[in-house]
Length: 364
Ligand code: F6R
Image 1 (cartoon, protein in one colour):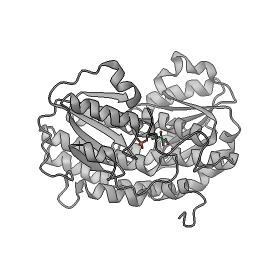
Image 2 (cartoon, rainbow, N blue to C red; image 1 turned 90 degrees about the horizontal axis):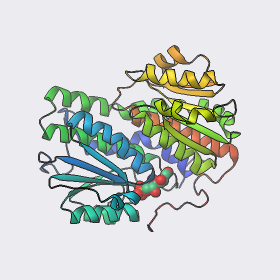
Image 3 (cartoon, helix red, strand yellow; image 1 turned 180 degrees about the vertical axis):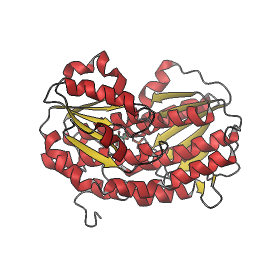
Image 4 (tube, rainbow, N blue to C red; image 1 turned 120 degrees about the vertical axis):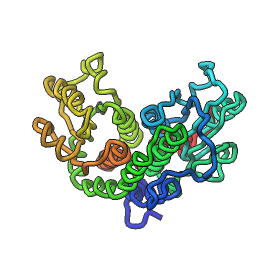
């Protein structure tokens, strides 16, 4: 039931404040200021290396998580798309944690990667949305997302719930490795607990984003740029747009622009720049200005400070609430989803059932 929404995708975008809160509830003891796992006595202290494997949007959640695991827990992370993982003869030593991420829990390549890693003696953690799925059953550590059923083929609420679980897992691992003081733990819990309200703040920009859709809907190609954890978001934004609007879109690390893709820039290519104010902001903005100098039409997604500093010269700006960098990927996913959604609606494509795509890919 879509309720009063026009599409399941729209409904699911709007459910995010609730389902993210619902998911975080199993991973945070908010009053105590502590992170927790659904299996409280699961011992992570011996984990020496993490391997993350997933497909599509779930892979991009994994890509964000790589930054978090390395930053907080200082544990090295390998990351692969599931369809490539087994073909590179991955080296998996004892003491490794394999994390698979999947909305459906049935994606064939991800499931095959799980089984391969299990045979190699890895501990398996599964971040899945369907608790009865094959991956949920075969994992040693089940880390559910509580997004509820996701009907729209383009993944939205599952993604932000995956990010929430992975942030909590990174904090748990950091704690188990003795790398998180009680005060740091408290801060992380506080920031994560702010995510649902911040997502609400992002949703408040919906109408303004709808108003920008026309500027993108006529384009043949669109670029998305980001740095740090905003780089996977750029990839996710491009994926979302191409899936449902059929516009060719690419996500790039902002600093890679001048190594090739800048050749594509002219006044017909909208460039979506994802850049919350913070330590990486200046660098991304200078990449953005290189685009503008070549006639590129930039839509800047940032917070008030970022828009104040760099919004001039953009064809449009999207103002997000000011949030801690830890939860920025969870919050900035929302405008990226809304933009793809409104562009698809403007183009009149089948938003919930895009051509050639299936909700669950059960063949390799
Ligand atoms: C993108 C999308 C797909 C899935 C991918 C993995 O919007 O829906 O890219 O993310 O097929 O699916 P799961 O997460 O079920 O393994």
